[in-house]
Length: 389
Image (cartoon, rainbow, N blue to C red):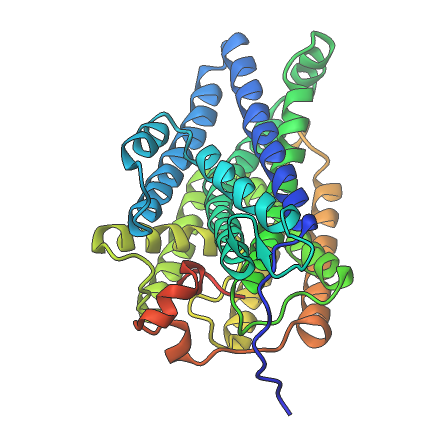
């Protein structure tokens, strides 16, 4: 028998600590990218430095646009100064301030009875904190796939195309090797943690969805995302070294496929048609790198199709690289990279199967509940119309 009991929404001290850690990770991630860009300019690699800054700025602008739009939709007060902060690219910090404010009240300011807060009923403050956390997790997901992922591809491509002698010389002269290593490490960590953080926020903010039961499912989910994503990014980097044109064609093909699926789902996340188009374009980009359920429906078959296609393309890239391996001579240890790609893909799919077979909170929402237009649906949280899993 399925349990239809609605869970109590509570914002815990652990949630507050994770949110505080999140802003630190965000700052370090952006700082690492700026560090890499400054070193490229210092070494007269103006193309690499410019591309690094473009991806950083583009993702930041999109995040500010959606963040301010949500403040408008929530009928927030003092929109003038909120707009000014977003125009100065400080929207994410504005949201963290509100989230930490509500989170502190919910997690620490309970009175002795535990039924009320200093500033009002417990339920209201907990919901505000959880909704604020959900908004941040959505924005971080945008950043992860609009900025961190392209940065990863760029930095790995640069390393793969750098001559070994040039690379060693840069290392000895205090060049950009350490900065690139830091950027790549932070990139993989940021993307993987953002997807896990988003799933936690999703299930915490929707009363009709079970939360992760314990730490083990979170670890398995993290490994599934990290391994499949790392394998895919390395594959794309190899293809780009082999042929930039083929890489662009592949990206276009996958993006068109993702957009086609998004259009077929008739998403209604944004109230504005123009912003809904931008949202669908972004989701199409996200689907190039990882799978997300667009409308909260069962996705067993789409999962098979998505990762079956991923495996086929990866094998095709590996075979092409082995056939034209002379292109990589003196640059990277091709066989070692291919072994890493294949092993990570296999392990990632194993963790995916384990998660969805044994550990996934098996609660599905019906279509009218997920995308209903009534006030009850809108009252719960905007995350209900966002990406599911």
